[in-house]
Image 1 (cartoon, rainbow, N blue to C red):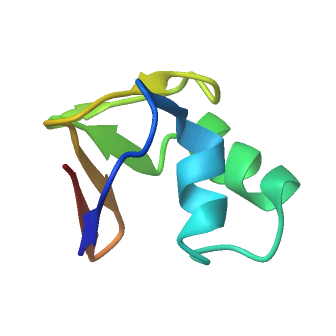
Image 2: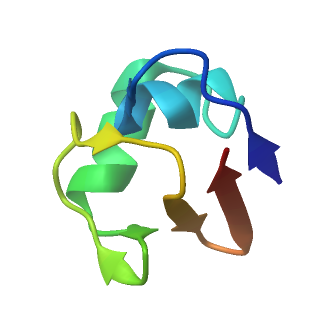
Length: 67
């Protein structure tokens, strides 16, 4: 899946919510805090990590390319 970034960055939990991978922002924060999200191959625990163009986010079997 690809996500076209409109601004300089998007916070990780907001990206997860915008793509409808969860029902709420709170649920997105829990998924991140529990270590279920990988950013560029490494576990990302910061809910508000700034996701920029070129980042690859993995959540379970979903891969998101930020363009």
